[in-house]
Length: 307
Image (tube, rainbow, N blue to C red; front, side):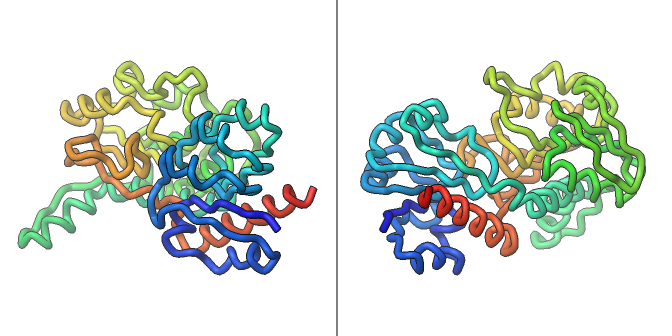
């Protein structure tokens, strides 16, 4: 049967039972280095002879696709495909499949957790106690805050619903707005309105097509003093230099992020700033999300290989 390359870190570090669906169907699994994003050379070495690919967020170059001599389908265990050279895949007739919404709950819950961690200074309190101190930073509550949600797809909708249930007023932006219910006040707004009116902004959208930052110096300056930004989407959405300056100057209260331009982040980068709460790209890394996303990606791949 087919050889299938498996590269998501959540699947190579501790292969879940769902992968047995492929082996029981007679397919051979080829794994990249466990728990690490594979680089270009490793992918070029592993892909030849593979008909299917369960792919993660690793950057994929045109050189990699050129080496994929038998590839028929790439199946993501998530929704983002900005790491893939889609034009090159299309020219080779390779199908690209996404596990729509499978990890939405895990990512949404982490986004809200980051909001709370930044607003209440939880990491600093924990670190201080373990260092023998008793730090008491006055925090801010979610209730009564205005939470702006940029991108109201599967993840953004859940963030809006959770924050609304906690007593926040929700402002949403999406290029394709659709109706959904929240337990409290909700309104659609333009991006400029959302950033100028929100106390907390949570990002749930792909990078901009032209490669510019969604949040740059001008955008930060338009925000309310003491605002919070949470990013569980893509590092390319934010200008880290602009954020660092705003954090240093007190314009921003804090930044919570699960995504970085370089993973793991380099020493001295924004992740190490005292007003940044950083997590290690774990948004969809829950038992439930990994199971749902893996099964969806496998089913998508099997359907593609059978057609």
